[in-house]
Length: 198
Image (tube, rainbow, N blue to C red; front, side):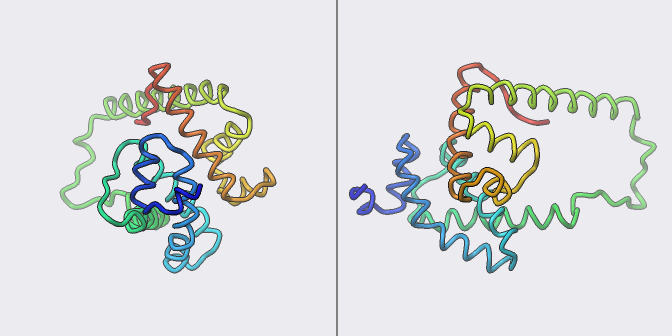
C-alpha cells in the first residue's frame, strides 16, 4: 500500500483502468472529502449529498472501466465534472424539464397512434427483458453484492438507506456496488447479454 501512497491520483486512475482494484480504494480515500464537500456546498442537504456522492463515484467507476478517462493532469477535477453533471441531472429530474410543452405549431394529430403505441410496447418489452436478464445474472453474485444491487435498482433505495438496512457504512455499500458492477460486466461479456435500456 505504501507504493500507492507515493503515486499521483492520475497514476492510480490508470492503474485501476488496467485492473488494479486496490488503486481505486486509495483514490477514493484521497478524493472523497473534496468531492463530498463540493456536492454538499451545491445541494445543502446531507441525505441528498450522500446519494449524489454515491452516484458520482458509480459513474466515475463506469467511465474508468469503459476507458473514458485520459490522464489530463487532475483526476479530482475530472470527478468534480462528473459530480457537477450528476447534480444537474438530479435537478432536471426534480423540475421535470423533460416534459414537452405544446406550441402553436405542435399538431398531435400528425402522430400515428398505432405506430407510437407499437414503439412504446416494443421498448417496454425490451426493458422487461433487460430486467429479467439482470435478475438472472444477479444470482451469480455473492449475496452481499446481490443485495445492494437489488435494493438500489429494484427498490430505488438510497445508499444511506441501504447502509442502514444492511448495518454497514455508506462506503461499504458503495464498495459492494462497485464490485457487483465489475462482476455483472464480466457476466454480460461471458453470456453475451445486452443490458441497454430502450
